[in-house]
Amino acid sequence: MPTERFQFPGAAGHMLAAALDLPDGDIHAYALFAHCFTCGKDVLAARRISAALTLKGIAVLRFDFTGLGSSEGDFANSTFSSNVADLVKAADHLREMRQAPAILIGHSLGGAAILAAAEQVPEAKAVVAIAAPSDPAHVTDMFAEHVDAIREKGEVEVKLAGRPFSIKREFLDDIAEHNLIAKVARLHRALLIMHAPTDDTVGIDNATKIFVAAKHPKSFVSLAGADHLLTQKHDAIYVADVIAAWAGRYLNAVAVTPGAILPEEPRKVEVSETRTSKFQQVITVGPHQILADEPIAAGGEDTGPGPYDLLLSALGACTAMTMRLYAERKALPMDHVTVTLNHKKIYARDCEECETKDGMLDQIERVITIDGKLDAEQRTKLMEIADKCPVHRTLTSEIRIVTTAAE
Image (cartoon, rainbow, N blue to C red):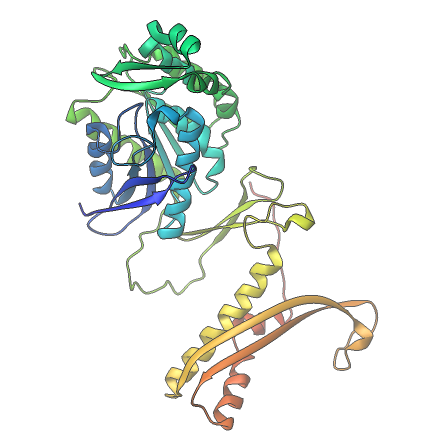
């Protein structure tokens, strides 16, 4: 199992230490893992679950929260909210570096953080909570005898798992403000809850509350005989095996092999609301996912290109690809091609070559820049080829759109 180690900036600007565990072969999906309270990315459960998932073709990003492990920052200044924000930053970094996580996995308080962060990771289709509390405030049970002193003094050093940690009043105030169950109720993702009935750190009643609050599809798997931290290797491997089998139902993953030949048949495009904002959509095309939105001026949040932006992008990409294929086939010295597009409405009467003479028309303006030592004849031919790209032909021909309601 190859592992890439790197840093990325967290929500507060601190550099967070991360490890991306990769399968030896094809990658079917990416997952983001959140570790338990005061643990770290290299805790046994995190490493073992991650390693077992890579054997199933799932790459896993795990990282140290602010002030823990090899990450920068002061743990005393971290809160549950900052953990959630760091998780969103980790998903953002994975999206930019590789591909957004389709699976979110959290252990203990990390499970609560994953449930809270899920709505801000629209590409995630499957969420897994392992031994997670239904209320983040449950963590105060670990230092209950110090809570009054923390509120009185503002900051107190406590021992957790034999190590000293400073806990501030701000931490207590922050976790008290979170209504995790409300977030679970509007999760709108496939949810897997895994919990040991004999867990004496986070009781099984927490799993019950999460399960009852969640909407379908939801699943519960008992981790009979396991301890809270999953210290037994066979328990961690079992968790990973169940996650991989369960998540496959919701991912529709396609293995991505560098240099693989694209399928001859067009791939299905799926567009689904994220409900994170008014217009935001997640577009899935095979193994690829992107966000779509409307500009702020149109009532959106501008988190992704708009519908017409995507239309122009398709035409621009097809134009450049078609020109590149022709240039290579004819051995033309075309070094680089750039296609710039714009869409606007014009009056039909202003278009002399258009059949329609009344009302408004859509006009796409396309400007092509060709770099290379080409003569005038070669440039002219390339410009002619641009009009022959498949998307151009589709847009300028009669189009039939058949719409049916899903059964």
